[in-house]
Length: 570
Image (cartoon, rainbow, N blue to C red):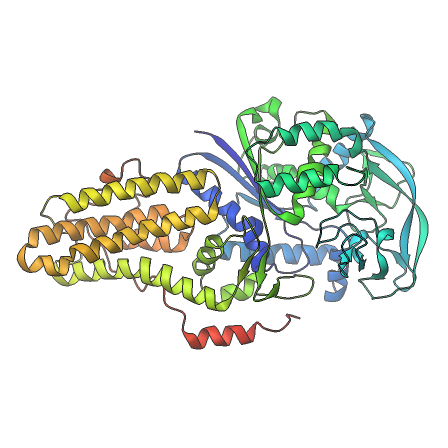
């Protein structure tokens, strides 16, 4: 079987993430990791918290805590919530780890050796009111390209054009709102990305299977306007990885730290070393170094579209530039935005349902199913409470939950809580097996291709086949005239529950576990043959009737939640 390295874009430390963040990276990455493990592949699934930069400093100050203590606390919070959503990371690391400090400094030193770092004396925006240089993302103004009035100093989130702070019209500090900004001279290190433009272009052109969203953004940054530009990798901040040339001081860079965009992607690699150092695995280099065995690894990254430029250009430039045998990404699955009820989710602006709030309302499988089945793959998607209620009630309660309830309760009332013997498969059963086999092939194809919405639609269709079989063959009627045939129909239905538990596990892992427990089996093997899978639980095998698998969301609940989350989270 293949070896798969999977990373999700690492969430920023300053607060709890919203559902848009979840569906744009971590959740589909978890879906893919769970599926690959079920198929027998070796998987290393890594994520971490992105802890450096001004946002962490400001959030810590707002919380009245030292920044290191704040980051440690929020890492624990984010890890707990990720666990609540069933995100099956092999390790959830920290970009502030000693491993990432050492590796980032080593990579910067190597890039300098290769002539790909240049020292630049530059003009940078300084806020007199704030008494500090302002990082790019803490300057906001009007985009000169599209007129968006909330463009940041490094990029316009509306048109995605790369910007410099001095490009903005009517700039202001996002820390204080101050407009008394002035330009002062400072010295920084730049990664000479422009020297690698041809190599990056050839590499991107070779990725014929990448999503159009990924390649279009990459090529836009690579070629539009003046094309790929060198980019600063240092900042005048206190919190971050100190600028060093490997284990040596870097003259002229005293008191500076590496810019967060430079060290955060390197954490993907360092996280594997953290995984090993935590005693969870061994030989981390076989996942990341092609001279140590990573040549047979398929590396897949998951991220929202705003992160695509850093993962298609800047991080690959870092890796290529070292001329060391680090593993480059094979496939980048990028997502559009999930909007919230007529507007945008936004962590900085506190708009939308956040992950902790979601878990307070309903168990994670409700959210996992809805978000994945509406994943914003080909265009932006929108969360509304009406759609959430409708789809949860229809898909989870009426289709899957109702099937499980009907067949288990009928068997208990007519046969007992053991699988009944008798009867042989006939034409309806063979037709069902053929239909399930066709659907399973399509489901696996979509999962292999990471086509999330299509995979969800196929899984739902597989659930529907069971309901249609019960409705058409009606064992509650058959038993009146042919008890043996009814027993066979019930036996098939109970085996379908086990099959559904296995196939549904990547999407709804908690419900899957509950169903396997109800069927009193630990046989969670992925089916190679549907006919054999539908005889896995033999006559005489005991089961229990599970509690209501999924409950319906009431109109009153929907209205209450819509009102409760209409305001801004403080």
